[in-house]
Image 1 (cartoon, rainbow, N blue to C red):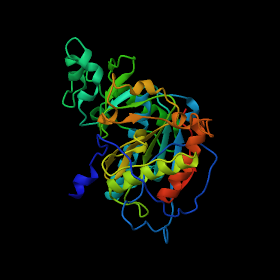
Image 2 (image 1 turned 180 degrees about the horizontal axis):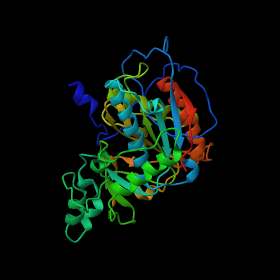
Image 3 (image 1 turned 90 degrees about the vertical axis):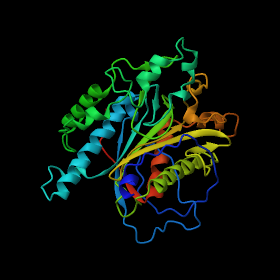
Length: 360
């Protein structure tokens, strides 16, 4: 059962809202830099005590200053850092000398992606609604996106190829580290992916959940946390709730009241989704994470293209949309939202958030 939970992928196909109360958060170090995130605490009456908790550190690697980057590049950064840490842990278990103890770190990766649609590991192609208008009912594209299809033209980021990829970079060798990311990004991607009607590529990836969109104006945060650390819990449901709490607190800073519900993962303003959550874990080290809509082009969520997260009866919104026509009409920048989100992440997870080397 424990093994099953370690490899469980969570990104339920439905998402919704529910009110929450916050416990008093521990004071954490504040840094003047950017970040991204969203999620929640337990729904029980008991609160997670902050007494006698020794803060870990989470190191931020941000690419926000680079502007929107290709999705496969952000995906590759996750896999390279995960692979390095897994190698370190394997060597520790064998009581071998590790080549670089600095690889055993918690990371927070921050990105703004170029337009892309992604399907979770077990997602159905049925929520790619534009396929219904294809001459063949979208058969050829459905095949290339199928979770079982492994042809050379499969429209997926290929984790199988990554598992054979030997990463050589270290925390103190940024050139080799970047080389590893570039190699993996180039080796894993389908050269001619399936395209949506608006020209955005579509990839199947290894997270859980249904189809979603990432693009400019959306804050994306990928925490790579070892949930075996004492201030975390080896429970992915707990982890999802924590991520939601981060989002809720972040939005409250901008006078936006948001909610979650007990059926659907994510964060909502009324009946409209403002933040998506989708995670994966390997040996309790998390990857993927959250996407918070700040000021994206909401036409990319049009239901003639996709049914976001497979939720037909709900809409999608953003910070910009919610603040329009209010006394706080000015929409904060991506970096402003990121700074607040990172502070909230430190409070919710009881970690010291530390600025690391930026991603160029």
